[in-house]
Length: 145
Image (cartoon, rainbow, N blue to C red):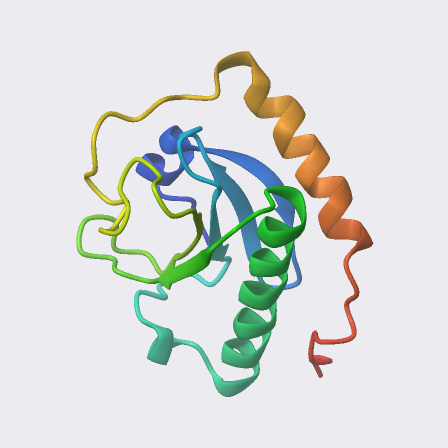
């Protein structure tokens, strides 16, 4: 079995970059700075489906995604991090930058109001995020092997 991106994730987000373990995607909703990490591990549904090394790598990627949001979308008042998977089963982790008074504050972003797509701006934003991600320190990433 090989990794395949869930069609719903593909439809609702834009590719940013491939990390050591996960594909980083920008959720296409301009109301919230929102990234999704999708581990390229076939059959992974839960955190516990990853071996220890992959769990540590995913944690480091979550930290990088959070730092990317803080850097690129400042000010961020709160980071929401979650792996729900009730609708889209394959393991994926949401990293959402929240601002007091945003369209869903203080509640969760899922199902809050009407999505506002980035439109033609999405590929440019994804490219800027990819460049910024490449410039982040990778010292926190564990070495595999």
